[in-house]
Structure formats: structure tokens, C-alpha cells
Length: 231
Image 1 (cartoon, rainbow, N blue to C red):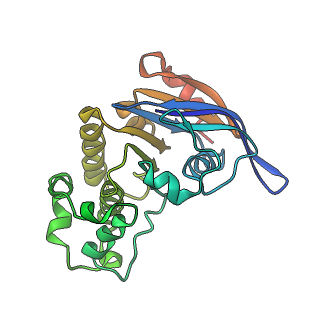
Image 2 (image 1 turned 180 degrees about the vertical axis):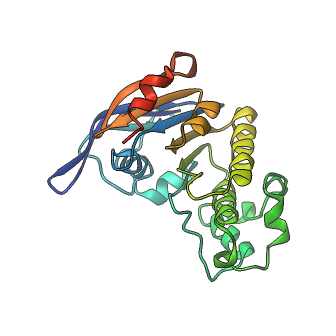
């Protein structure tokens, strides 16, 4: 469903990505791993249209979307949960969730009951402000907001960052459930090796803006991957 081919990306004169290729299919989790500053978030920003690419192609559902603006990619079923969550701190949980209505036709602007099956804590906190939630609760809210757009591709940038272990397990469970439904592709950027290893169907490791190791989960050699994650 998603195919990134030979992508280069620059910030001014500084090159952040070099000839990067990867793919993500329905019913599977593709994990991108690497140290801080190696281009993981730049890759996601390129896929969702927040950063222009200099070379290469990004295809979604066999369509070249390389030059589409972010809102057009969202309407095609691509949802992005950024690093740091970026919930609206002064809006309630209910209002934060309703911001996910933006790309939907008016007759689809409702919060599916499934959201509260996946994240029961949000139902209990609908009237609380986003800024009053814990980091883990904010992360659950950010994922729920993305799911309200009914995505076919869910992109998650380091969802475990700064989260307590119990909520990490909840998020791992939700990602696994979404994958197993078979109607969504999931692209996950992560530094926490065990979390990525347990979820990944395929993986790619970035180092200095290049894919240096990639393959299926069965092909993953833990020592090779960890070598590119340690400082």
C-alpha cells in the first residue's frame, strides 16, 4: 500500500535522507529504528507531506502522492501521530477527539464506539482538558484522534517516549489489534528495541539518513540492529 522509493530530503544545504526506500502493507507493522538524529522523523514528515522531497517517489495505493499537500494525503487515509503527541492542552478530551473530524464528510463525523473499547480511560475523561492528562493518557488520546479519521495507514512516531510501562503495554496491545484486523497498514518509528521487535512484521534501520539494515522479522539479527541503536 505504501511504497517509498529512493527518497532524498534536504533541509537547506543539509541532506537528511539518502536514497531511502521502504514499504508498508495492510495487516502488517513496519518498524523504522535508529538513534536520535538519523532521519526517522524526517522520513515520516516526507510521507505525510510536511517536508518536500528532493528526489524519489512516495506512492500510496498505487498513486504517486509525492507532491500532494498534507491535507490531501489525510483525505486519502493517511493519519500521523507525531512525536510529542501534540494534543491541544486547553481543549477537553472530547474536543481533541472531534478535531479528527476535519478530513471526514459531514455524515461520518462521529466518534466510533471502538475508540473507547481500545482506550477505555478516554471515556472516563471526556470532560477533562488535554493538558491535564498524564503523558501516557495524552499518547492514547493522540492515537485515538488519528483513528477517528478512519485511516488506512497509521504512522506513529515514537509512541513509547516518556510513557510508563503499563501504558506502553496498552499501546502495544492496541497496535497489535489494529494490525490483526487486516485493513490498516502501520508504520512505526521507535527506539525501544523490544517494543519494535515484538510488533514488527518488517523493519528498516536508519543510520545517518540511510537504510543500513532491513528485512522481515524472521530475518532480523538482534545484534546487527542493536549496533545501530547504541550511542
